[in-house]
Length: 378
Image (cartoon, rainbow, N blue to C red; front, top):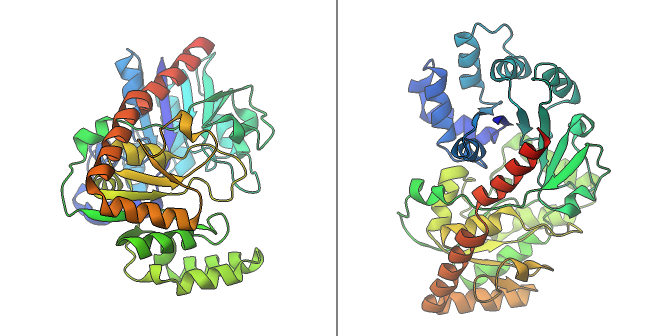
């Protein structure tokens, strides 16, 4: 099997990377590309690594990594410098058996149709949908897909599946991260990494304020450190969605004091490895349950996770033995304070959670199942 994994990275992460590596401008594509993959953002090249481990071949493309992509175009004499023009040239160059779009929302159906003309006969086009939006918004490319991959059946149920087939690949943790991200630096009593919007994440502010009253909390969020343009968009969205009071409460929240910029990839994993307690909320008001990535990232990194109690979570982890769950703000505050006051018990829960993740919830085991699904269809 030859697989081509197409994805996009967070623009903020790429911008920061460009600023930190000006010496790489004009460097060979492979050098630039490997440095970007070393950021360990999202799935990085983990899928490709598993394909190769199984005797196949593959490549990963970060389609919005403008600097590296344009370097690839120069090296291959590719006409056109737009994102999609370069990507189509790369697809033609790789001619994969499986073309897999991890980011299923950033590419048009027209691009997918054009890509299919460049693939070998019998090739599979697949894409991933990790979380549905509220209200549900199916990927535009869905009608062009041979296989839609979802993190859980409730996601597929949120919109009509017009792909030929749907398969499930749940979230997991890549153990190789532990060898590539050192457990160094000052310890954090508690941390949270994520968004604080006033629509999808409306409850989150009050929950985090509860954590912050119980234990020193280090918060990493783009929402509270928005640029003027982004802040204006947030205000407009709150007005349109009739969430202005919630938006104003967020802007006045004590959480704004000392909030740090968002962290991604290797930096995020470093924060998790240094955190005694990591707060998590799975989906907020989303009317279905699919365990989020953070559940496995935190436990995999060896931090004690405190997460909302959702139906079925006990099938993944033993509550209060491998993870800690809460059912209300008061329950959350009490449990966070207890964990802070009982370091030995907290550490034992963290160790047990990590052991469970490394045994039952590794990313490579999830990917092996997916690759088996692809192989059966070739």
